[in-house]
Length: 497
Ligand SMILES: Cc1cc2nc3c(=O)[nH]c(=O)nc-3n(C[C@H](O)[C@H](O)[C@H](O)COP(=O)(O)OP(=O)(O)OC[C@H]3O[C@@H](n4cnc5c(N)ncnc54)[C@H](O)[C@@H]3O)c2cc1C
Image 1 (cartoon, rainbow, N blue to C red):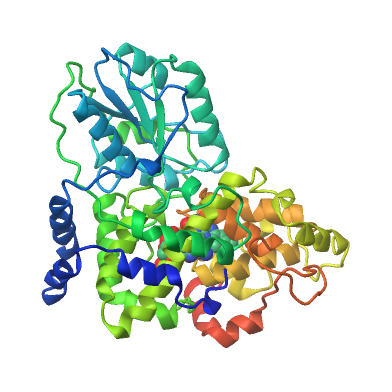
Image 2 (cartoon, rainbow, N blue to C red):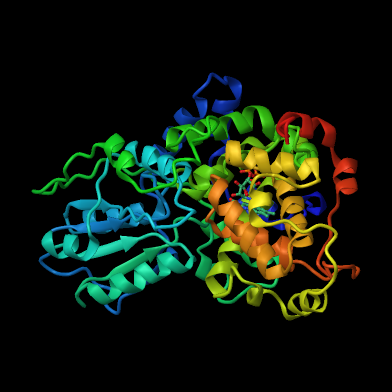
């Protein structure tokens, strides 16, 4: 996790060799860089890949039947985690199934708003405004399928508890002759192909992913207008009315910096390649520097594909000055990100102390009664009322802007362990704050980030000290050695705190 320690990895080298014929096309982009160049380049790349084959290893059958129901009148893509049209393996597969049988293709998304402090305007507005760009509609799924006599349901993949439960529920309620097909459209190497088991750390999964990149790190074929139209089409949606009708916490508002939707995601990627990528290698641990991609919200909501991001960044890093930087980025967006899906998919306790390694659980137990230097309640933490100005500044940035710099997230979560009465409380508070305020929250990356910081998953034991035991420790002085802490505090810590 501590990315200051990360080096260029074989994953990046494999990524560099598995990009097919795109180098020539990239030149097109580097000669002239008018705003919007990336959209044009990607459009061209997709259209050149019309015939690209879909790799069936991206699929797993949830139902017993694998054959499309005979005499049906369409195929359904049940969109869930990957909310985009292009660069979406699940939609590509659904469309290919439908075209093969000359059937219409339907797309639906079931909008579920749990009654929870985590259901905020921040998240649902980003989601709905992104969906508005797609102009598709949803319905209640099993009824929708039988009503329209659909012959197959294709859906995307999430390793989290609730979506896996929805999948089980739908499986039970669909008739036995309708295949329920899941496609991993979020990872480059499908989660179940990368590894059949819980991986110990980045070190143990990296080689597995790397060896599979030549097969999976490909371009995407274009999704074109579907040639077969349904007799019954979807009603149009009043998006503003829908958003206004949702029971969400409107006190957690929309951040200005993150415009929802695939186009905005692509524009953010373009600005990263043009302006920030060159700093990623050297400045990515400096929260005062603009060196990160900022892409996590679009990746989290599936508005942009991580595979697309990795492809374009990889294409842009041909010369020796940028190769190392590109390698560091590929390590984050491919290996570290795919490791988090592995963790949540194969560990049912992905959000509790029981999900940690035995050594970590033991060390936390051994130090559970240690005297804490400060004890804060959830409310004090939420309101950034600690003695530590850096922590308060990071917390304020997260509450107001819906983001916190990756380096500070580690410090922030570890301090919660230090300042609360038990590791269980610390984890629950960290996840609550992360998932309520971070625009990219409620994602496997967040569960793993908090679990890494507080209970050492994917990490090793360190020198034993109070409260933390053998869990890796971080402190204010360490941050001060890395970056200008005072500058960050001035920028984000309100004077009246
Ligand atoms: C306590 C804690 C909580 C976190 N919560 C979240 C969260 O809720 N959602 C989230 O997406 N990330 C989370 N992260 C991981 C990481 O900090 C963010 O992904 C990153 O800061 C997002 O900024 P960026 O898009 O500019 O990242 P970049 O550094 O530009 O990286 C590009 C992409 O790579 C992936 N990535 C980067 N770092 C990691 C990592 N450490 N683990 C897995 N994938 C990574 C993300 O998809 C990211 O968008 C958390 C980390 C910690 C320590």
